[in-house]
Each structure stands twice: as structure tokens, then as C-alpha cells.
Image 1 (spheres, rainbow, N blue to C red):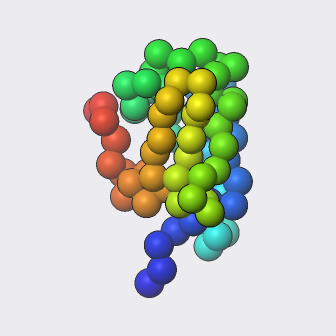
Image 2 (cartoon, rainbow, N blue to C red):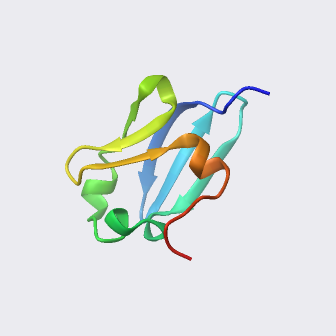
Image 3 (tube, rainbow, N blue to C red):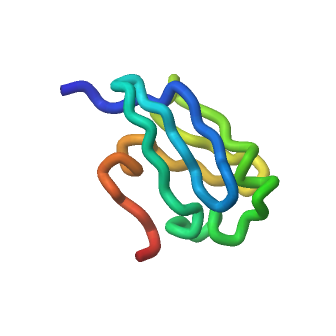
Length: 78
């Protein structure tokens, strides 16, 4: 089975959404990651895809999160 890759990512409120190549759209609360928890909603909306969709990037707050980690539920905070 191939690793999931993001086609698109966006933020609505305090949630991050990811559209995957397998057709799923998954989301998670920004508060599950230390740097995202302290980010403003404007900063959260500046998410970009990196590494051909294998990672999410927020330049302004210097945060990178792998798509695989999100799919597997590997969050920093409970």
C-alpha cells in the first residue's frame, strides 16, 4: 500500500483539513500540535504543501508536519 499524499490542505477556524490522493478528506484540531496551538487563524490559513504532498508547511511559524503522521494519528498533544 502506498503512503497517503495530500492534494490540498486548508484551515477553517481552528481545524486543518487535508484532501488525500485516495479521495479521503481528513481533519484535525490545530491544538494537537504545540506550534499550531499558539498560531492565529490567519497563520493557520497559510498552510502549504511540501515534498510533493508528503508534508504540510507553515512558513510564518516554522512548522512542518508529515501527512503520514497525521493519517496515523501521531499528534504531539492529547
